[in-house]
Amino acid sequence: MQKHSSFFMELKIHTYNLELKHPFTISRGTRTHIPSLIVELQDSGFSGFGEATANPYYNTTVEGFTEYLEEKRSVIESYNNGIPENFWEFLYPSFKSNPFLLCALDEAYYDLYCKKNGIKVYEYLNALNKAVPLSNYTIGIDTIETMVSKMIEMPFPVYKIKLGTKDDIKIVEELRKHTNSVFRIDANCGWNAGETIHNSIALKKLGVEFIEQPLPADDWQGAKKVFKKSVLPIIADESCIEENDVQKCHNHFHGVNIKLMKCGGITPTKRMINEAKKLGLKTMVGCMTESSVGISAITQLAPFLNYIDADGALLLKNDIASGVTIKNGTIIFSKNNGTGVSLK
Image (tube, rainbow, N blue to C red):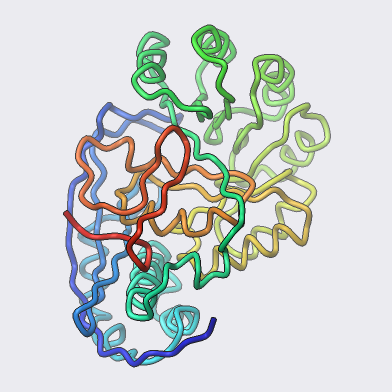
């Protein structure tokens, strides 16, 4: 579907400090709050929403986002006609160094465009009547007792377990005693090649489906070795940020986890999924810890994927928006058009 509508957009900026239900720890550190910026694009009584969250690993801040958006406001608001893919191309020269904001604007425009045209984003993407994978729920690094209590609090068919400690196998052994759910392991660059190959043997016996990004992002030599010798599939995350990274991951990983904020939105993610499939790589889309604004955008791509990690809003104490919901791993799309988002 290639429908055109005229737009005379107004940009609005909303900032929040998202509080987590529990402190969230990965191999790089612990967070209790996530600063978030919501982009709102308004036109003709419709509002489209997109999200960018601040992340120390990527040197992003909400203050920096706000300043940059104000600097580029006239560029953004000058766009008045075209499909979402064209809006992304229009923005790219101004936002190529700021993919988190490019993502937020791309998500917001898809939402606005599809609301104006009376359709859902997944319909626009031609994703009707396709099977949708279950989302996992993430358990951050903590004491084993706390990790177990988080699983009991949130029963899910698939868990992503964050690792990168001295007791990783012991942790998974203990967690396995409390559930038959599928486990996915995310070491967030916390292992070396030898550890990964060794750990894969024990983890396979413990019902683990795959290991995500065990090695540092730039350790391509180690990745090649692990790719050949691991008994579990290895999924790239930090090694697959931009579009040209998909080709690099071929013969180094079994699949790729694409993050919309890192690559710049729905538009490049769709291209990356297509490229990965051509290369025989498994496809996954993941989230940052973000509200239902970002999650509702991410899940529009779910019908194209093998795996999805869309639990970001479930980790929050108070969500700031309504939209797509996830119950027991099942993605439930909103009845509203666009991505289905409205701010609370």
